Image (cartoon, rainbow, N blue to C red; front, top):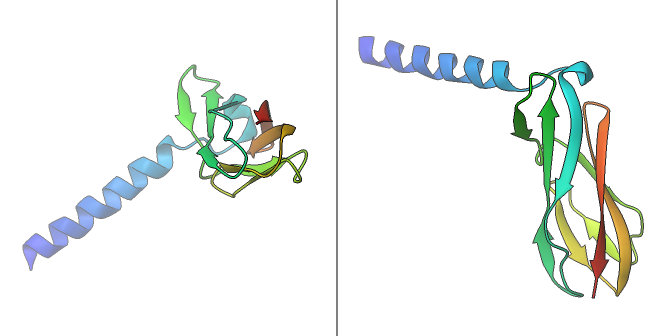
Length: 109
């Protein structure tokens, strides 16, 4: 019984620490950088959204960001940053996290 209580305390502590490390306000995020390789037509590629924090550190916020493509006939992007090349051309892929946005132009060939 005591061991189970200690496990629960450890899990709750881990969750609290993880939540405390995540930026929670736009003022704690200085900028967002989008990076990754552009896929070929018919292929996919994972993009990364990296938040530069006001404290000077960085954090991968790819799974928390809102993603969009400027030209969905050229490329679409999933809610986790996976971009799919649909036709040859260029598109700007944008990631927004806590009202701060960053983007990168990708060329699909």
